[in-house]
Figure 1 (cartoon, one colour):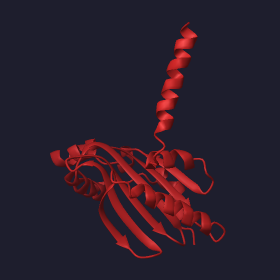
Figure 2 (cartoon, helix red, strand yellow):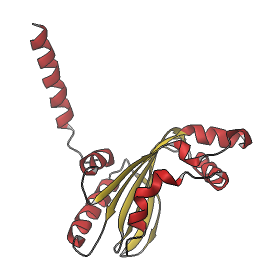
Figure 3 (spheres, helix red, strand yellow):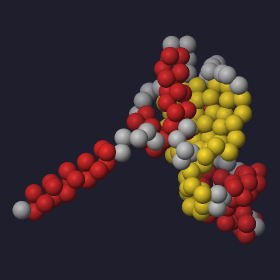
Length: 180
């Protein structure tokens, strides 16, 4: 009897999960994490390597609101330009969902970047940075946190200037940046 209750509950859960087939960045990250054309990184706040005793109250609050960053980068080359265009189009389509509110967009045809966010102005759940360059590929960065707001992000930028970034966590991205 316990097995049939468990099985029924599991089937109900799977049915509910499979009903939401709407594309999302989280699903996109999961689907492509092990793909050889992508580099996937999870970056923790300790990458900043900052002396917390030297931070102002506002800077400390901004740092506490930041949980982690997920980075997914597609490495473009001469052989995978069609796949690059397909994957870039998928990300752009996901970011057109109304839940992603665009803050800004820069660039032109083959190079560009955008910054979007999910949540309310005073309680942002995630910032999304999407940058692409035809020669190198593209990167999607999800900055996840709790009770983030635009002021926290601007303050976090000032913390970045004081930080001694631990580059070891970013080594996998060097091959994408240096790809010519």
